Length: 485
Ligand code: ARG
Ligand code: ZN
Image 1: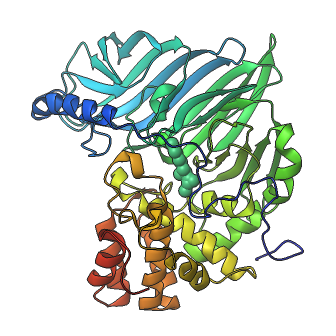
Image 2 (image 1 turned 30 degrees about the vertical axis):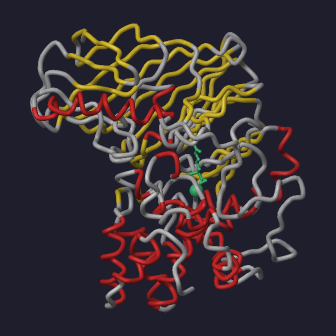
């Protein structure tokens, strides 16, 4: 069932600064080319080791060469955290269950900052060495190919965010009452040791202890809370596979609302009281938005849902943290629609390289256009036409959506808005019936998995029976404003 608010049309709350609807982040952008060049060198140095029994220092992502690690696949992270917002001290223990995909005398995890106090692999103490974001672990006994093994890392310290190539912050971002925790693309490693690349997806359990009165919110199903000696422990279970960047453990002063939506979906919302009045009318729409998206994209992919509405003025964006997006302020309805659409496109179906980010952002942006179109607002065609009118030298045409060029550009307008324009062109070419069948097939075939740009093109051609090479060539691979709308 689709419900709309009384007016039918989503309205933007007046306190939201005007922004291109296509780009969700609002932070200041500072280019920082140097770190990329430096990590590039490090990755090259680690290269030859990949052929040996040493797991590689990265999974080979051209934009983030040290992101993730080779030689194993993580099945499960069991994270036990204690955080004190006053001192900003974090105590952590990560139990990581993984399988070796090759013989391993040594393997890496990604961890930036913090102090590691001990590591065991199986029952034996392992030795380790830190080198930038690489945590190199040498187990006492080499691991056989296909061996399942359990690594326990004990660590502590004062976590802080990383600065991304575009100048934005991500990771563990302290707030005045806790921490806003969002890891796209890099920041998961600021608060737990991880195979930090969307290629590797895992189940998670979280046990997070904070001072009584604060709430710690993670992904998936709420498993209960217990207070003792002035501290409260929250437990969370994320059963479906999740990329590390989509994990959260956001801490703050939150008003909590829990209910079961029609269909049995477990909803848990945590809202900063200072944002509550502005957030309430939008959060009320969450079940109907998810229902509407389920009709378009196929069944909602997770057991749990919800929202974390924080007040984090230095963040400037929301993130589609799995099952429960995290918002830096009360979201408007189109932002809620956007982060909800990511649950299908980005979270359930994940990218294998950051270069393919348009598969997340272009799709979530197009979901906003569709929502408007089907709820009494502008048609997607009108949104497309207005964008197409942008002059050839505008930001929108700076690079093609499927080739941002570097990690500095993955959250820019060509990825979001032009990515959505490409989907609109596809819809025009194949017709509505086939287009919506393609979107649904994409979410269904790759559910709880991955998809690449090449696979999306192939699927579109198979579903439509058309040769779509030229369309995709023009709209996602070629720089500059296309000659024809
Ligand atoms: N995926 C988020 C969104 O759509 C944007 C995350 C931006 N992250 C960043 N570090 N700038 O809406
Ligand atoms: Zn997005």
